[in-house]
Length: 404
Image (cartoon, rainbow, N blue to C red; front, side, top):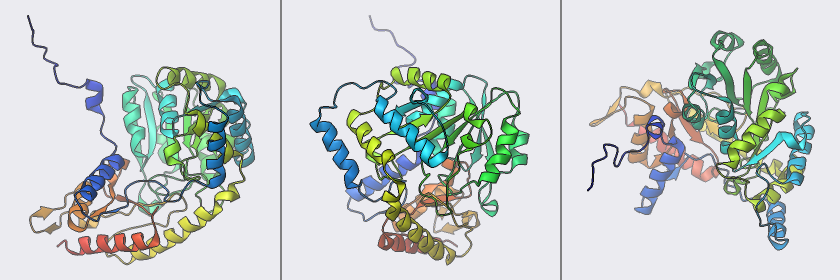
């Protein structure tokens, strides 16, 4: 005898609390339109348009030939973790041992491991806003409460020490930030991080996730790690990976350096979800982190040239506010001057409406800033050819000009 279950066909309440990644959702819609024959210009995904350098591909081929194809340790091969230790020392002035390193299937998993290992119901997690789309959703999965500290374009999207000090309380467990930042390209200076560290060190049990995945894509000089300041290495999870700087998004390798007890917790968490990261990709990543960063400086030079081009083109569009990003490959213009305007029966109420309008009107894909914590902005990725960028900004300009 069959009985009706009121939950038949329903997902869990946990899944109902989180939203689909806005960047991936826009990429999906872009692909669907392209499959229908439309010529969409996509500036939604944060993916370098370069190919992985040959010396890294050669390392992967050698791994296959040498049959490095069996289960690896959950936290990664020892020699790869040792290479990451050398990279941290060389580039960031951070002294980690191999047992403080955990290699994961992308920096996103590395961040999720750390949040799930540290955050529980009732904990608060501070996130300077704008922030990367997945921070808040992973915090919700862990049962924590995201606390957003909003920084505006007029302040180069940087929070102040006073904002941070005012947000911390006995419930605060974590602070998560990225520098260079996705989605704004903002880079925190050493002195700015020192001011934050002075505040953080006053609170026992408060930890920091420093997302440095865009470390090498920095046009202002060196990217500074908060873990290198004072005693912050004892309370910082430094996140990095090979996706952005080495054009290895599909290889899915990220990693952390952290206090040993946190690294062990992340290993335990990962062991029940994916186990060790792909063996061949690990050996490719070893070649990447062991290499002189100058090997990929040609990519950084191209990104800077594109940054300058897009800055010029966006500056010619009336009524949007922009800053000049110091790193990553994004612009995050404030487009709120267009809210309330219309094109025929289409009324623009917010950044989400505007993003969808530009996709339908001019077949150009950007991402709503609401997903990043700022409802007044859109994210534009300039990880595309100059020809593509010129065409995309022209379409954006045309779409906005049609709004009255």
